[in-house]
Length: 226
Length: 242
Image (cartoon, rainbow over all chains, first blue to last red; front, side, top):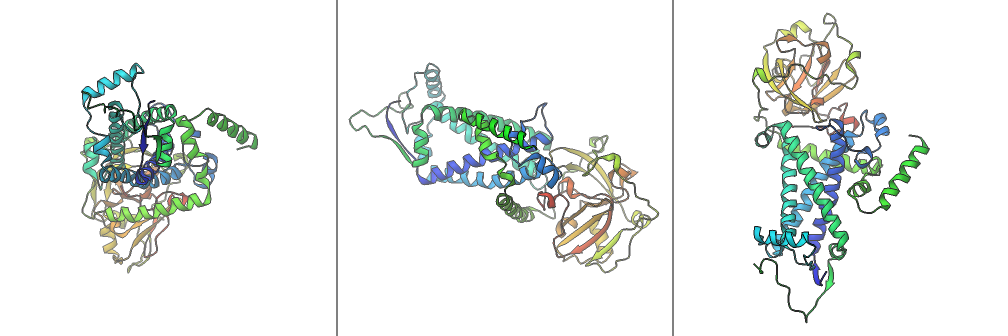
């Protein structure tokens, strides 16, 4: 790692952690709901799902915590919407989206991807390389698709046109499942990389990490180097 | 769950947590049965009530559930109740009466023959269960709105409630009760409603989840107090519109 400063506004941090908790709630409760009627030949282990004690639920609610999981799911939905809006708002009003998430070209992605594969990609706090940019845009896309396919499942009559776009109710469930899997994949890589560069976690909690290097020449931004 | 098993589970959990930040461990942080905590339950319930309001606002009297062609109807309808199919107890049509109560002018009970004499309609719509499964079914019977008009129900009241022979109970908002795809089902696929699907009377609501479609209905009442529901009493969302 070579220096740099990472700053996050309070809006970005509130947005990030709301969305992080919401995503864990959505995935955990979603797995409990899935387990009730699996669409693939497997179930998620009970202990990683969210929805209360299974045995207690059989007594109190005549199910395996599905009702509880659904209550979590449609509460998490609002938290997710809140976090997503905060991040979007922050990205637009501070110019973070335009400045740090753009531009991103296939060429820059390929160059940084090859460098990363050879472990030669330098990471500078506060500067996103093209692989990171594509990765983050991908995550935003997946979360948006998750929300839209979720609405298609939640309201197949009132939002029937949306359900139709996904090829009907049963197919919308599959789309919802596929994007969940992609988000789980993103989370694994995201958390692994944070473990490699723990300063980024510090920045996302405290708002700032790293230190200025006034004497060093500014690092060329990845896309400038094209 | 025995204490020993609980302890072992707890030890296993801690062992996994100790291994670092896996997704499983992260998910588990949220999943250590905090769901059963009283205040968490209360908070989830409040959000669920808020979701009732949002869904009621989203509901449109004009918007219809998609109708399917006859060949798209499932060969067999899935049985569903809070107990297995082999303990369904059939209702004797000769002694059956549909009771009426609450804000209704003519509260005389109805016989099966009287119900069958009403004008019938057919809908082929998708039954969506809260669990995620679904099928396209075909249901025939009078519209609930026609029935409510006929018995002189107060249509400005807020809710309609249902009582069932098996102890099940449900209720819905008046706008949904008056929706053109809310039926009093007397037959499915041109045959008298079989015992296991709710003979002699099932309420079919195309704009709500499956559990809002009560079977073996023995009483209907109109009220301004929100009727309870079997599953909503067990933590499920009350409005449950789709």
